Length: 127
Image (tube, rainbow, N blue to C red):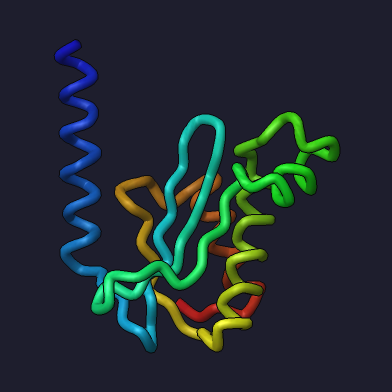
């Protein structure tokens, strides 16, 4: 059990290190990424107002159906992360947001997190 507590403490420390330098405004919201073993999600957050402007996750039925075809098996693969990145870029455009601050949330910038970021950039977000 001590190993799990130590891992969690290291994650929280990395997360705080990132959050100390990253903050979102209404003009330039924070694109926060959360990944788990089964899912990946992201939100556009205005930290000044404390509000979420847009959110996309592989747990949403429409996104899950696009990834797996039948919607029964949610996948947290690079393909899923790419789709989530594209969808958050579309929602940002609808809300009139072109520029964001990327919050990797303590996760390493590789794999699914990097795939989501590159798909959001391709979708038109600048960060």
